[in-house]
Image (cartoon, rainbow, N blue to C red; front, top):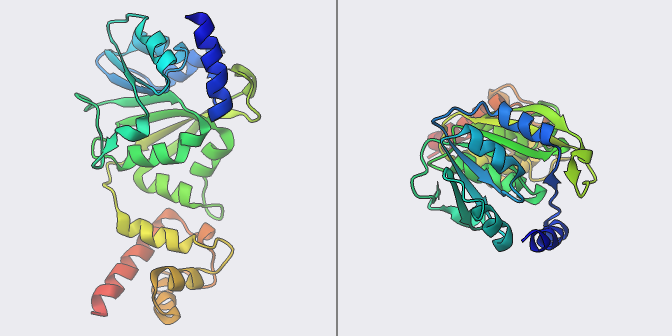
Length: 271
């Protein structure tokens, strides 16, 4: 099993750019940061070789581990741990009808070291799910963690999206030397605590329009993206104290909320 696991690990790393955390001190630090209670359920995404999994099962009442790769999933199942449920699946395929479709999954936390390519879409799906987690702890690229937690004038669609639904904070850096094979960049453990806000397509239509051309002025992006006149865009911006010439990255989360409300009210009044 170990030879197959090693071979498969190499294949996955090349395909997904995935590294496995080897430093046991960092593994324990990640699990301890999640402050897991004895009655809690933990969802782990990408169990890999099980380094984090084996620490999670010591703390939680139950660990549900989603592993996409067949050999790795069977390796985890072969551990025969009573409070560990291994699901062989692509986690993105488990989001159905705005819900994470895992039987019996209600109150839970997410703790995971995920492949970098999954970061944005996974966080979005978790935060927009009807049965969203109580808390999320993810080991991701350090630069991406910084982007998620950024403030004006360095906002992005990613930071606005996460901060609208949750309170994010970077807990600590994980050196690239702690993983094998060694990635090109350092990682970080980020905590993302959902606010309980439901999916809001109308809000993000405005945000996406605003960021459609980051180097252009808001008045142009909103006018083109929302198909409204420049006069209408300018009026809504000025109404909430934002200059039409500003760029999207300079707006705070509150500014985006106020802008969305102004545009919605303008649309109602113009009918």
